[in-house]
Figure 1: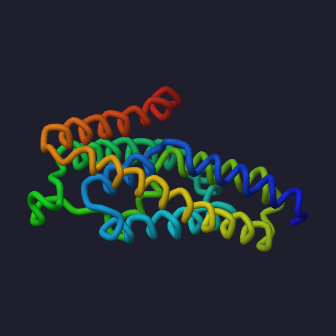
Figure 2: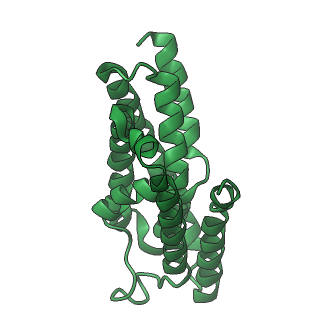
Length: 198
């Protein structure tokens, strides 16, 4: 990979991961409700899970849709249902300081697995592999995955810290509830492109 292509890939990757989407909205809500320390497994699940997904997409996972077209519909429905579930969890989350027994941030494996039903993640993975590893050679796929690990660490950290700053303003339970419901509604809004494309 040439330096120019690597810079283009890094720019594309950073812009694609740092813009609002399901992962970032959930990280902001988790940061506001649980803080950075408790959100670390969620952050790591995204930072490792999404690049792993990119690598597997580059290595041929997308051929499943060609071989069995109903898989795309199943993925679309599973994505929508899971995002609705996550929106409900965010809307009903209790702050950790108020009731530690109720509510928790996503675990590493949950955040990593979520990438497979995240519509934005699929769009990003397909675009990145198509643009920056069109020959599907192992070295190019490894570059794409590696760059996404680096930019995901930046993005997950930024969104979680932003959430903790917002959390300081939301010490009052009513404000926190309004914030959580707003984040849940925004998460549901990320389904619009998926449903329109159905």
